[in-house]
Length: 509
Image 1 (cartoon, rainbow, N blue to C red):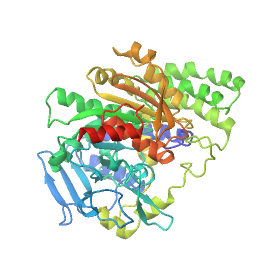
Image 2 (cartoon, rainbow, N blue to C red; image 1 turned 135 degrees about the vertical axis):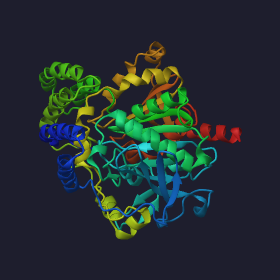
Image 3 (cartoon, rainbow, N blue to C red; image 1 turned 120 degrees about the vertical axis):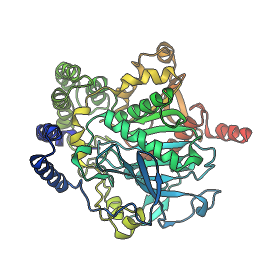
Image 4 (cartoon, helix red, strand yellow; image 1 turned 30 degrees about the vertical axis):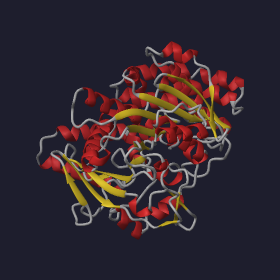
């Protein structure tokens, strides 16, 4: 949830820093090496990546040990006003917070929260949620979108009537390292591509299901929003490849969902001007001028490929000139929801969450020590710059061919990851069902008898355009988003209204 225009000036500095990191890693482990690492760590500490955090091996955490990684977890007891709105008693709804320690890294501690379903946790799916940014905490979704809680202006918690935990057990992870409460004491652990991100998340899931064996056989779905349009396909592919190779413990992967994501930049950046003119943000004459920027952007993306470094940073700068040119014309419009004005660095006011999470009593309940919470880390964002323009659609055809379900959904008023660009890259996926998907007509997505969106579907692939929503669909349309994820994860057709879905659930029992 960052404004890319605010980051471009930092790219050159970051590329130089990463080059220094690589050089430092190749130095012999002598006094010069130690001095280099020490100076670098002081630099990263100044950027809030090396916090002073309590020892997670204390008696407050339950240690789940595995050969190469560990989970340090504790029951999460936050005071929540009201009733959970469930047949399950509050005492029987398990909430957990913890750190994942990955020994394959130098010193990574990845923070997560896990909320057992308010429904039937023995049968409901397990859902992994990753927020985007890159570098934005999943607590943004937890407290403002699809988590079990909402924060009042008096910094109290209330139950979210439409939290996704009403239909699933859901994991919120702060990743990549440096995001939210996740941290490292060694700068070499910072991730800069999806290989590193997906490896960390795969090993986290291996440890997680060993710590929670009662959920290991439940259906599993990978979900996320915004820059998680990169994370979600990468993590899903990593899990699927491991399952096929019989690597590690089997994860019961069934599908993945991307909300208003950035997945195929070459297609999505080309759609910016078309979307802007369709929504009345710019004139057709402006679109024609902006279109002249695209060929250079397209060439730079090709140079970036899947392994480029400096060329990928150049592609980021060149392609984002398209977006910044549009924003220069539209002014203070909220690029996450064009119906409103942008206020603050994230265009929304998330100060209640930051104030709540930075309370001493809450930090103690979470077990995060004195680490200061920041909604979105500019440092993580900059580290991931060279990953930005890479195409993460390339691994999706194999997933579809193997029957892994994909839902791509997008709120209609989001500019930065707009529905038009998302629908275009979905329609251009090269897989055996492409022709039938293209021929499928748009159908209404009904919730309580009212059209909440329209969708196109064939086989394992679904695209949904959500009405009256911006970038954060679960925040703008909470009831519709809960109904969406419920039908998707339970294998029900999106066109079925909630009344027929309820009937099917009763009949299955």
